[in-house]
Length: 396
Image (cartoon, rainbow, N blue to C red; front, side, top):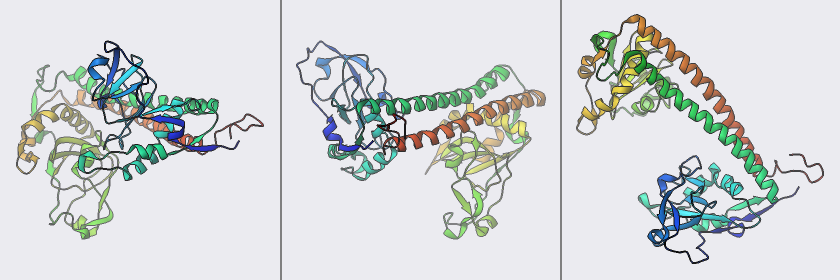
């Protein structure tokens, strides 16, 4: 089956106005930018009277596709079909509205517009400066959209929707497992902040070895230090690790290693500058600078301390001193008093967390496979490879 590509501006209305008079007392759904998620969904909106929002806001209907025009919302993927409580909607002036014409399906256009390359190209064509850069309407109008028959558009959109729903379920399952580890901690040990079970307390410095990372050379970003084979963990790697450091973006050379130190896998990395008391367990040997502290002890104790710090992090962040940037010193960390329920309970907790992490790992592996399948299906869909052959009716 041959296919035709047409400009989006020919198959959809871009930023259309209401075509009929609307009673000011009509209830409409109001959406702010926060009501559009980066996963392509919207909330039902807040009910407002039309008279309150007819001026100074963007009008649209339920089923229209909303495209955030302003940075960084556009780059982050705030592109969604409006799923509203009411037929009529109004919202942020930072939305472009795309309303399909008769031969175009809204879900198909949504899936087309959510492709990653469109965000990359759109960013290059933004106008304005600083935090006020926006995707121009003209960019959307000129986008060439491959347009199979309407029934085929619906089939493609349904297939992509189905895969995306599976991905969303897995992401939710992983998030629930993240919360489960903290729930297990509270169930076993009570509130860790107030020590509601009255456990004996021990200082963190007595639970294991606690030392700062090493980065003697100045400047720290000297190119001679970098680019070798030795993993280098920074505060951002720890803060974004989700509790387990499984990747790195920087490395030390032999020169870098000689002015630093390698910490073994299983070390708990704790940030003491910029991001305060964020923690992650190394899953490989690595170096880190003196803005990160390494805690070493038995694997069970390391797991227990990591979980305990996850409850305390916001408190430590709020109490950290602030000069050029927030920081907390090693003496403060060593002096922190921790509820100590005993080695046996700590080992039981560690085993339960291992089981949770195994489930998370399996879900992450499944999610990665679905992500790869989704990307492949998306690419094939918008190059005509999924469209039915006229002779057989089978997918290409």
